[in-house]
Image (cartoon, rainbow, N blue to C red):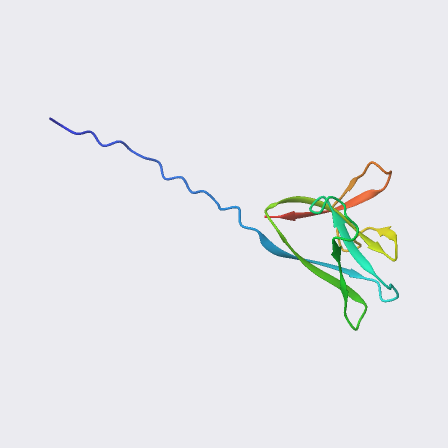
Length: 102
């Protein structure tokens, strides 16, 4: 009796590993800046940012690979990310910044 060996394809599956993503917004005059986006259901209080001595507001989020829309809230005003070149229209007639995590 002969045993036939099946050829098996090796499939490489890339793990969906979450990674830390840095968000930065320059607003030296601001008293408070938060980050809101589809990663936190647009909750303007979920991700407050910390200001450094130069007026750069920063926060790190752990995000899984995907496409995320976001905006900054600086002293109660919605702001686009000036460092972001990719934006999409939102339902309010303005634009959302887009971050792609690979």
